[in-house]
Length: 231
Image: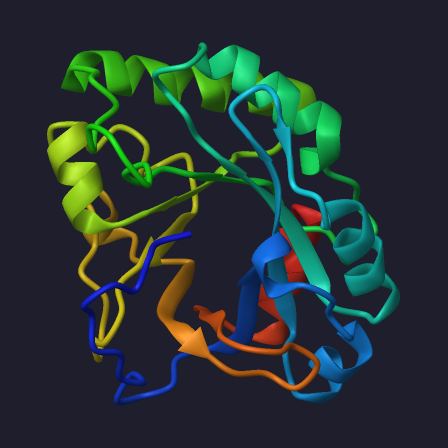
């Protein structure tokens, strides 16, 4: 997910909600039983990117998190300049991003942020970006019956979508804002607030070597289970 270059990280002044993480192949081998024992209740795990990339550790991490009793979800790193939102949503849903009502599976998330290199908004106009996101959302909803979770920052969203408010009534927000006591929210979600908050990229958790992104869920364990079960 986001890079930590030049950013001083601080823990939030007040812990808000349940503890979680998000991981990809960069975390290497993970002991999910240790992660669960450390108090981590949920995890988002990278599955796909664009329409060709599959995370090398997803097929290990996803079932292992489930077996350890960690409520897990998959996420897709969006590449809006490479193919349509529908194509990427279908690729995601077919390669780990689908959903099942088993009490341990969260709706999939789409990671909308600047690429590691190149134009922050992928060369798309704000109208084209809104259309791409709508295309992804509609296709994922048709495939899974769930509203896709949107991961983003306030600055990226407001810049690249033109401060669009059109998704806030549909998609749960997973906001990234490091080193803050409360996160800044993208346009539209200020009246509905965040569902997940990635508050640092330099966290540590038993069972994982090195840094890991840490997150909060904004609610109780029963609310997290309700989100997983769509109830």
